Image (cartoon, rainbow, N blue to C red; front, side):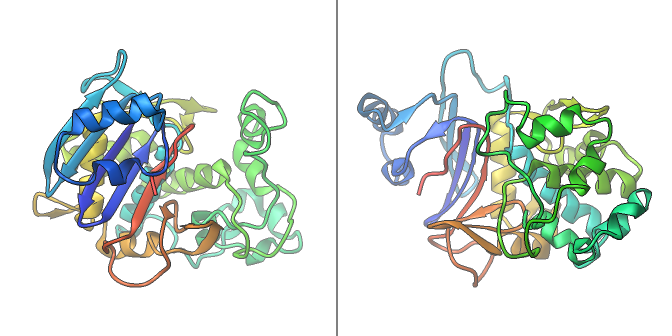
Length: 311
């Protein structure tokens, strides 16, 4: 599922399907969206599309649903969940419920005090968790999710998933290299739960989903806690509304839901991934740092399983 909100040439793409480079350019202008999409599907430029919603200025210009999917069907968002959790962290931070980005990570987990005594761990901060630059061993990309060697699969089988993430061997200096890490998001979910005293799913509903007027959502669980890395299911029109809120600087119908300063910071590039993309705080950004939160030519992306933002 992919939702686009066009603000000049700024795009927010949130996906759980597959789209290829160039699709948004073909559909960015007003026009015959059904014909354009049909042509791209015939050309093989778009495949496996479950849902596509196009909006400009708060007005939905086009909706497409494929197969059994429709506007009331809950869709598995997979790692789009990570960007939602990143926004929840910002909301909780504004309420004084979670530690600030500069806080030492291991200080927030006193139950694992033995780990912080290991060399190098004291330099890791919450900001490194947000940017997935912890400098620890984690392999979630070179092995499939059906392979027991995949780090997320190891986390799920571990008797203590949080200890598993925090105990990964140090591989380099924190803050230097990005390494895709669902365990980092699991730590953010745990900090939100500890700080708010609520289940992650309950806090998400109260702090984000209800203020946006979203319909039903579901979360899958890992070890009796909501799967912060990839467990969220949502309806396509509701996902579009999340995108509209982000492009409005975190506001919806006159109410500030996600702090504007948090969105500005979290959508600022921190570390390069692969041209033209950088990673911020649980967002992919297709432009160099600087300027306002939403600028022409900036591409802000939350992406899920087998998804690719259009460049």
